[in-house]
Image 1 (tube, rainbow over the protein chains, first blue to last red):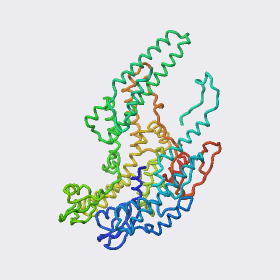
Image 2: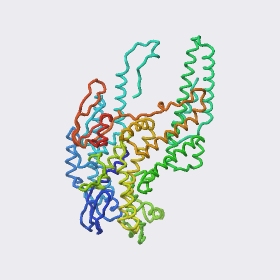
Image 3: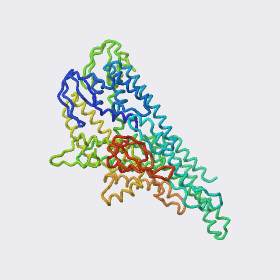
Image 4: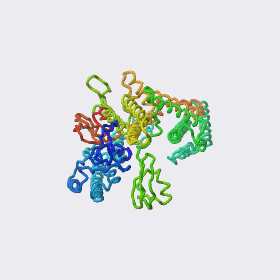
Length: 196
Length: 195
Length: 216
């Protein structure tokens, strides 16, 4: 999948905004939202929040987790633990990119937050690279990766799955090749290489 | 050596993954010529000496070369077929003349049939409910409202946008505007894009 | 969420459009990431197309500058993108794995468990015929003697069901048997609800098709 497709999926997440206009409820296919009351917070899908923000029709309300203290704790936990920490939500990077990108003025200490989120991403990516290394060296054809988000998983495609495919293919061929001495009748030897 | 020409064909086909080259009629003709002559030689040898074992190896080698040539020719066509398909998705059912030139007549015929098949499938979507608004060759990227952030360099009064919104362009004010609607003002220096 | 639910409107139970939309999204995700073609979800697609048609009619009645029109248009273009991408992905698989898909589908049609919609099957057959006829006229007919026969089975490209995929378990699943690479021992694992894994597609293919896991 491409990153923009994952961003597309992440844009369905519901976030909070404060509209500067008043409007009755809207009935979208993905759900009902509203009514819109100027100055009062309400929930809409992220894609709609971005659209309204760009039209200057609302302020965005940063999600609870977009807070220095919360993020520092997550960062510490991520550094400390061998495993991947459970992130505040499945699409934290998409939310971060779109909210901080379109509405930095609505997020207190936005640039610090941007930095911490990037740090957390870097720590997780580094952990991922190490895990992949271990996985491949142990000849693995199976791995468990709880708490990795879609965007993070996507970053190792196609490298990791294709490497594992290749490893499997090599192992299978090793099994199938019977040790034989070279003789003139190898040409007529039956039953060897089959397409996988 | 046998099969060298056909490998050149394959290299040509794979050289530019993004574009399609001219259909190489001449090389194909040469490969076919080689195949015909190999085949003939084999027929002669096979008929002439059914007892003579020493020719067996020669016949075998020629046969293998023939099979290889056939396989490679088909691979050449197949590789081009895949590129031609992307042309349909990129250009629609009518190819620009300079692209059309790159295809052989057979390939153009195949392109037309592919195009018709695709169109017929697309028409069937939603046909049960009488809806015809789905064109698979569009809707390629997730939609994004294409806005850019701009800084207003000079007072410019009110600007009415396509969707009816009216914004006031005062010096040093910042706005998010649809890309398409800013271009002129950016060129005039009234707005400056903030990157 | 069980992807095998048909959309039935019974007296007490209605499946909301919202649910259908979510199912379409899962179907799209799985189809994008699975190496083989998955069973079609035409019922859901038709339902969404109906919704889109209905919405478009309503939007056209609103003035162009109406904010609601803008918002609905954006949502519709998102849904259209997803549906188009889903159908396109299927078409590309049909084209790539044309020959084995047609063979397998013929058998599946007999048992009523077809993976392709009738329109897709027709597309596949037509595509295969066109390919055959092109190869024949462009090259094969010009070959010497008996070489002009086309062995379609040799042209067949098979999806790699052993390729590795990432998945998330929507529910607890026991008894997934993994083939061990080096050793001869097969390993049985359990997928906890919500857990994520990377493993070969083949052992979990059925779980994708019945909605117990989602490819990510």
